[in-house]
Length: 449
Image (cartoon, rainbow, N blue to C red; front, side):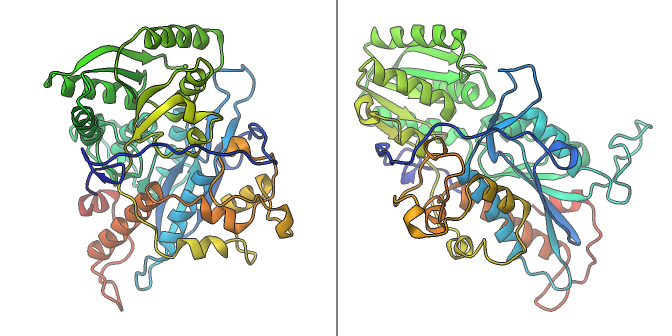
């Protein structure tokens, strides 16, 4: 896919983040979920001659740093649920004669450790699922994994960890959202692929935006993770080749998104520096949860500045629905080129019919059952963020259809299409038969892609 910015190619047009509105049936964060199922993970599985793995943060966060008790996932995300269904829908459209394609998809909860646990499940030996992944003899080849290719993960931080693991078995990994420049280094991540552009193009676009408005000074706010750190470094390097001044760079601590005293201290210092600054634009190159904290505080302190959004939050329903967001000032955002997944909206409208529902659909119905009549439905024509929905608030299929995005969803659809074409070529298939059987190695798929 070609790199793109907000409604244009990198370095092109930009747009402000719209303000959201409230609904009478809104409430804060819903209940948490304790990982369960095989190996303690929420999982959707369908058997087939060939298995495609998937990693999706259907819950966005965990309680890992807040408590010492059992690990639980929280912040169930409707859009991520729908993106997992895009993968399932797209796989159903792969047509290989006499060969079935199955899936094995896990909810990572946006957590590196849970993602690695899921990846180890995906890399199990095809012929002996109980065998150890690593052979006793260091010179021996690793056992051939059941899963031949993995789609995911969303964030660069998780994808980097997964990429190191899947490379041991030469399993191709295709990310639909990880943009860190670090992942472009083939000598480090030989089997990593993606359907999104590297942050290299986004940073160029941001610098071009600043030049277009003849701004002379900027502030860069990044974060202590692969996305925010490498993105900020890329901006500093690119700005160094111009006459534009960087007033200061602030790298948020790794646990900035947690509501604790250290976060409040750091936030207060950052806001003080921004208030005393004469910078004409503030670039927030960090994840959505960090941005939410910063902009809520900026609104509270009546800041009115110009903000530049990275792709992680530029089209976020949660950010655009922050009360008083229009008071924060003007926001310019960069997003990926957008395209609708053909036929998926109709699929969503009929997804709950019948008895053959995948595990994620069944779980979704425990969080948001279908409304029994129209009077119960949330009456909005856009996707509300999850923290503004009541726990167990019923939802109609029309609401879900409004939550289908046109960037990450299409990136997932494209990843499955790439796999399908690679398999068709590898197995030498025409419309009637495949010359090869479904027995092949993961490295062969990786070479095709």
